[in-house]
Image (cartoon, rainbow, N blue to C red; front, side, top):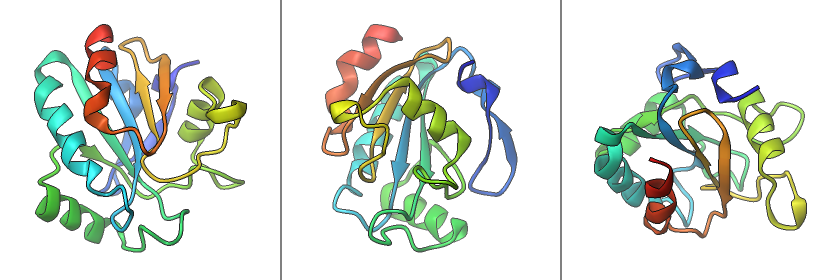
Length: 158
């Protein structure tokens, strides 16, 4: 099993097979518009722009699980990302990343790479997962980890 076995909904409500991203290096991030880390959108977009021609993609999954920091609907989220940070990378419908209603993709990501003290739980917005071109989860990064600090890791698997 790898990430290509999952289906998700994009921010416009369309079904998307993760196999669409086969042979690409991915950074999957649970995002939120009203979080102390929201400014990371800027660095996520910079990573995307820097490496998109090398088969790299950032995938943003909005989540409202942490202190109601993503209260808007998909259209509001899309407008915020576009107008505030000129986000060009792929965005998806809101998901839950923990608990009984967690998105199957996130359940898989957390099983593949646990967090601090082997915890599977996502602790906060802007947790990041780096995926190689074969769909394998290479690393998990804490919300405080700035996206541009991942350049070396990304370059190593491009």
